[in-house]
Amino acid sequence: MSDLAATRFPVLPLSKEIADRTPISIQHFPLKPEACDEVLLAHVAGGDQEALGYLFQRYGRLLRSIAVRILGDGSEAEDLVQDLFLFIHRKSVIFDPSKSSGRSWIVQMAYHRAISRRRYLVTRQFYKHEDVDGAGGQVVGVATTENDYSAEAVFGRNGLEKVMEALTDDQRKTLQLHFFEGYTLAEISEKLGQPHGNVRHHYYRGLAQLRKQMSESNVRIAERHGK
Image 1 (cartoon, rainbow, N blue to C red):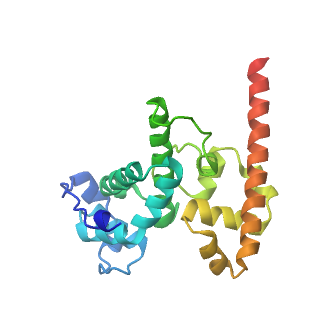
Image 2: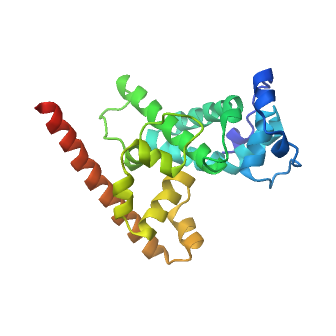
Image 3: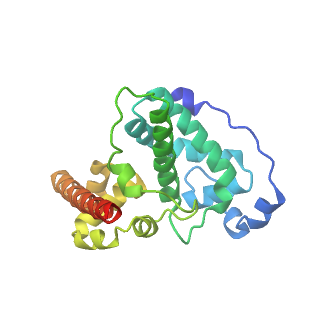
């Protein structure tokens, strides 16, 4: 990651539209490396390059791991991370902290852009054998807006509300923290105050339930179209 960390992002002009929509009350919080994601995003929306650098230091490694997991190629993953932060630079003004956390917004953009990139690479026969999209692609589905990547919105868009209601509270929290906040199972274990083995159990049982319900849903859709 040292080569990525050294990347310089180009200075983009701040349009009047972005300036008018930047939440001034948040933007005027002092800019510090430890500032919350929402404050950093507000500063980025105001054209602050230093804030973008802080976000890169905070999330570069995590987003690369997501990209590698979905794309299966280190070079493609690094390119995607660079593109993603340029996207954040241009689009941070649309982030709405009332709909999702800054972390969730950033992580979900990484999932969606990596999944889109993988589908593009498949059409270009980049892979020898096309794999079915992984669990991350199934869970995050297809975004309809760029500013609302809250768990509730994504599950709603994919018709998974009833499936999520069928999960236990621990399973639901584990999947949301993993797919929507980007936490590892070890981090979730610490965050929930539960043994790592228990968290793994919640993750795999919850994921199996999601896959089962989604598979059954796809069969029903196919049957309806077949009539």
